Length: 239
Image (cartoon, rainbow, N blue to C red; front, side):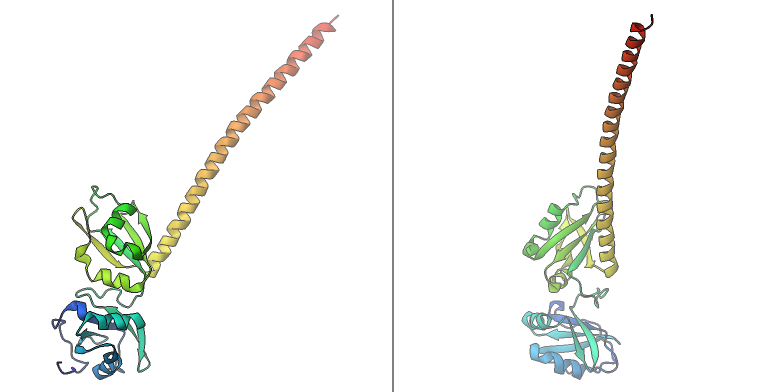
């Protein structure tokens, strides 16, 4: 195993297989590589610890099982009174690494009209994870969607292999859903409910209009009947 490097030095993540790495964020000066080695070595053999930025690091394990053991117990941990976020490493992609979300945001790289952007198409694309999907929400007009998974780590695993997911040979952009995207989803659901309510009210108004027209016709018939009776009475008592 290579010697543990001093934490204030930044190294490019070129050592080892990315699939055997975890990404640590939210680090600060209270934590060094020896602290990281002490905390994570019980989960498996550590081959290397790399500094990524002054506030993040990468740990290379000897096998995938070690990473599974870490993430089975921790999504975040406390070392030297500092909260650290733990994720599977994905080279070139650390956006939202601090987040923890069971919801995956997806959209095709190109808004190709040949794509049937519906739940069936998406389930076919993610068929390997079908048993882990709780639900799928489609936003057809803007060609994006949200996949709700049972476990946080499933989202991490999928983000490690983005090149594996295509629809009509078009790559799919994927990332963890942000909290405001969840809020957008809630707003969309509320809007959909309002639209349905509006449709029901329109139907009710139309029914009431029809009923009102029938009532008006009945009233006109009654008025005409009364007019005829009045004319008949007048003709009888004219003389």
